[in-house]
Image 1 (cartoon, each protein chain N blue to C red):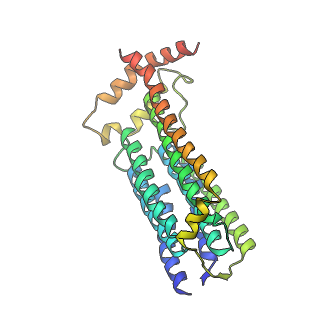
Image 2 (spheres, chains in turn yellow, red):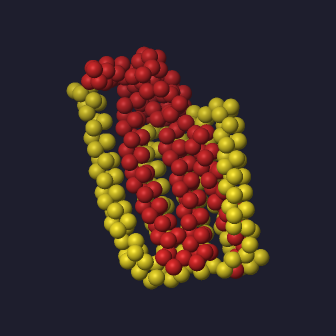
Length: 173
Length: 148
């Protein structure tokens, strides 16, 4: 056990536990708050792995923007505040979901461990300057394409809200 | 130096939790939380491989940035769809059929009645039922007319 092992284990256990809690909790709002814990500790995992820029972007975009959007959606759809079983499926489907989830976990862990082995490796995250050089040099066209994608998704979200508002206004008027 | 099994196990656990969230939840926003967990698992695998393997193009970290961007765009559009669905149906229960596919009089009220509006939000007791029961059949008729 090296220092990185200890750090990654400490952060990773919190991330895994809060991820499981965020999909099994009976409070709807707590699911979003456990998602905050998961994504924040994943930023810590990225820091341990030497990817400082990814950790900062994770905190800014995921914890800052995505979770706020999810919380807004929960508020706007009148999510119940207390514990409720209405957002979970029946016990049969939950058992089936647990089997599928355990199968996915076993398959991924088995394949990746068999392919890469449980070996000990050297972590070299690289400098942010090198990452920026590659991002705005070799990867610049996918980067610009993604900015177009963000614009398209913004316009699409606005269009969906406006189109769906029309039948309601006709009914109420 | 670091043991490579640790991030791999975390990736597998995150992906499994995300799959459980997608399959076992009925609330559309909670299904989205499961999708976010799966995307985070993919991100962690990308960053791990970018930091472990020789990566002169920094592909792991750059692709992780791209996945974060795509996830943000996906969440924006998906939440717009969820809110539109809430306005059309009055609930975001994914196991219930759409109100114009089922019987228009008895399908929409049960999820709203069971969804805890009575005990959990006593401050607006008449508003959800009023919106749902009086307008839902009219809205079904309107959508059916506009569709035909």
